Length: 72
View 1 (cartoon, rainbow, N blue to C red):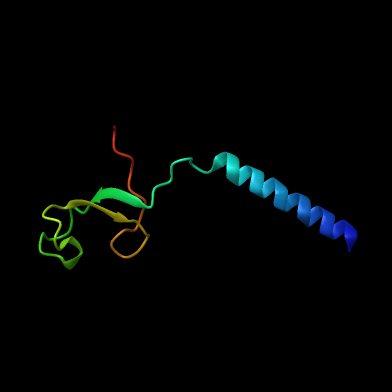
View 2: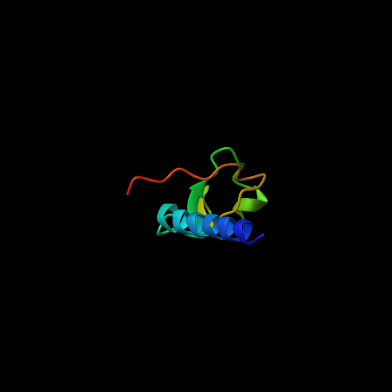
């Protein structure tokens, strides 16, 4: 049991170190993106006035993949 605990603890520390090293430093919640396939009257675009907009981004039926970074 102590060996198992030590191995799992070491794996946890390695996973935390890998996540800290690999996770993007700036990982915004709000992402600007466009919906070229949505009708301008679609409820998702209410009050936006354009198909390009920004909001807290989640993967769902309207956002099936993370948007590509815009050249900046």
